[in-house]
Length: 404
View 1: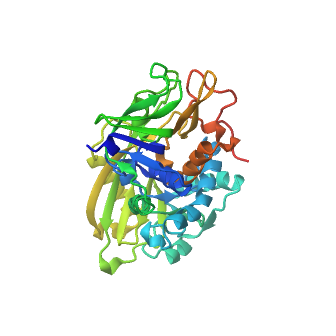
View 2: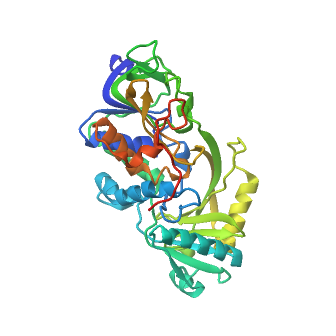
């Protein structure tokens, strides 16, 4: 191992090379700072499986209205984020196509209509259309669907292309950024005090990365990282999902022109068309601790997708993937600095727990981390502090209540 790699110094070290970590690294690099991303398998975790729906409107869930402002802010940042990476959006798989929410039966239609009521109250644009109008937009939809709703604001991106593009741009900007080794723990100014200033990262190969700021963005691995402040509680849980990828034969292209999100007898399913002639179908959600692809999950996804789009039966199944997303007790991210006895702990930022919103929230997470690094105050996101479940949780941090 070279001396440069054994003792490396950068302005910012980002632990975790998923879409969140890479997005943060790109923001740091654009600010003129040096950055290192520490991950043995960049973009190989939840990012690898993600469908990439940028669905701030459709992803509004009951009792999670407090997330809406964060999701909308990130959705608004996406065009600029993409433009900063590539002049051709094809390189990132970014598509500003609409989303079509459809129901299989009358109960599904009513559930979507009820959700639309909440969405409208929150100032979101969701248009109810007839089944005939939905089939004009997407001719291969089943004529048996019960209802449809158009969301013009919800788009998509291909996470695999996006993260590959970020890595290429980091290299093009002179950033030898990715260290393919696992981080073992944080380094502190006072090695006996885990609440002292963070000064870098120790790696499992014995090397170190010294940094003025360290961002912990390694998903489910964040809670097990050595050197975290003793009072910090990062209650992350693995939520597994099965994702399918299918190839569309030439005679059926284009199969869809927009993302279709459906309810089939109360069970959600989504179909996301890619520009390369493939279709992504997802996603089951389970907390059984198993990281293997579930046969039942594959069957369920194919069955429900065919209810909405019968032509799915003619596609070639080319990939089945299972990954765990990092969930939190309130299903909201852990994002910000960590408080200590004498104020925030210097040099430490946490960005994890993004659950099903990781791809969508990448631009706002990157912006927020750069604000923290530059000392810019922004109290809008105080409710997402990473220490809100800790013994020293700051006062007035709450995710209860709706968006106004």
